[in-house]
Length: 221
Image (cartoon, rainbow, N blue to C red; front, side, top):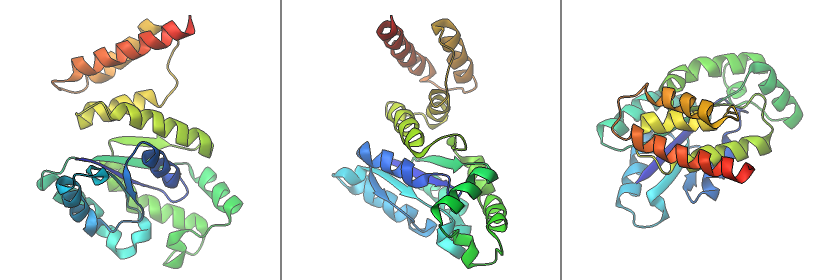
């Protein structure tokens, strides 16, 4: 069973990431209350269909229920349900522009926030603990919706081959950024990042990445 949980700031692009996951064949559910995560994980574990690969969006739209999000993640770990947590972030200026252009209403404006700026500030505080636990963080400030979807699909596609959450998250982060064109420099960078983790499959990951880079260089010759 594979489980990906997507969270992050409103307006940062969670819908684009969940669309990319759906294209990769994941069974996707939006706006899931944290208290339902374990139920969905149980369903994925017992299912023989496409629910074995699940992706769920959990965010501040859940209102008071979202306060239990980090506790719900701990329950998943305690229950032996492996998952990866993706966090979508963006700078305040970009979020403000997106809300003005899209004329959308921020979910926290329906509660205590007086302005859109207040809502963004409150949401950052609300999501801080979740951000600290994320396996992969996408900063979408400089990305168009199309670019975000493309990068998310590429990084998540790489993650499918990796069983280790620690290494897989870091590799996805590396692959989501532009790397130097020289193969040797690229390999050294990746190798250095993998050494941050004591992981039995780090060598296997590196071999896969070496093969990938060699194919890319061959295609560019």
